[in-house]
Length: 544
Image 1 (spheres, rainbow, N blue to C red):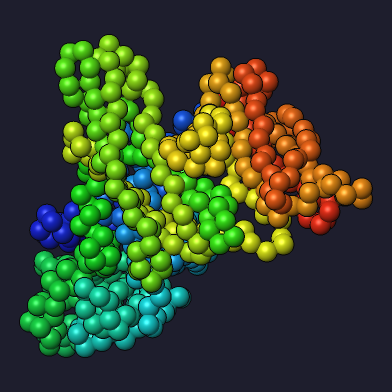
Image 2: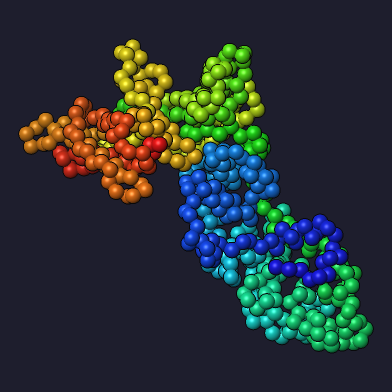
């Protein structure tokens, strides 16, 4: 979109607004004839492109401060945390699983692409941008073919011909005003309606001497060149000249507000997340569910913090990092049911500090809950530095009761071992009689193992038949492992299960070398022939 050359007379800050509105985007890779000959991007390149794509998608609603903060993030873990915070602080109902703002944003974006495309995606057009930010107007005065047009008295009156144009009217826009009108003109006849400050831009005869005169021009009380003597609009003098000139600056301000990202309406969350955007401590969290009793579920929460994000202090011989952790679980009505505060100290010999920076600090907390929907909030602070990380998510605690076969979460672990009798049920990563330490995935990636490490799959099955009778076979666990790069099965194993009190432990180790390096998806299915039921869980991991 381009403004008329008269905009050179507008102050510099207005030109900056125009430049932001009218920026052109580079063509897609699909239009590049050399694309076929280019090598496919590696995973790092694909992830980088996915974050660029996300930033491009949310460009109508992301604030300049958020944009700058996102570009300064150093790694994918920080970017993933940022995106989670970005949507959460815009969620009007954070205690529910749905984020209505996010869903509405992508619905509007899809509609804009379908409705307003014109040689480029509709979401990249001016009408698409306004629709994404403000939704559908209350009314549209559409002139899709242009043609004869009688100017309003404020526009100078008189008959003329116009390019196709539309006027969108909003009865009220929060923070902008009431009875807001936005004008779009298709001066190229190509379907690309651009937003304009100048209501005279739609005039086909604007630069044709003597054609399409205004009322005063027809009365020879004004000349056409007076339309181009400064100001953002080429309407010329009218009986409402002084009043209109005052409104021109209101229109300039209105355009700036209409195209600005909508203000956040998240109350106290805005100040908290604004601080963390600039001093973000990245961390990953895994939440699992294991049956504890008839009406209780153990919820193991595992936090993983990259060492290179922590501040280490100390002597020349020994360095240490300190983490302060706090969390709470609330019902969807806001009632607190669980809370915890803890600290974590990490001591590293100074000569090993550079090596330890490639590792991650782990923290485990197990909270008992009843089945239902909850909100989990966790904050992690670097006590030696200034970084703070925070997550908030809705968790759905399953109901393991009844006669229907069920299972715990499938945990991909780097350590599963029995615990001493006096430690049963207590301590870090302890679930019953075993210590199960998850390998927490980072930034949406699969859990990563070195080729020298053992990969262990662990879960429990519930409400199973014992298989002790002559007509009942013992329940079985089937492991199907497939490579993601080739989509071919790598391993299929079936093993019988030992059932005690209608419950069984499913555990399978893959020793180093049993699986080649690559990315895998595993599906573990428990079959209970006695009840003709089965339950399946899947997970992903990588060996590198």
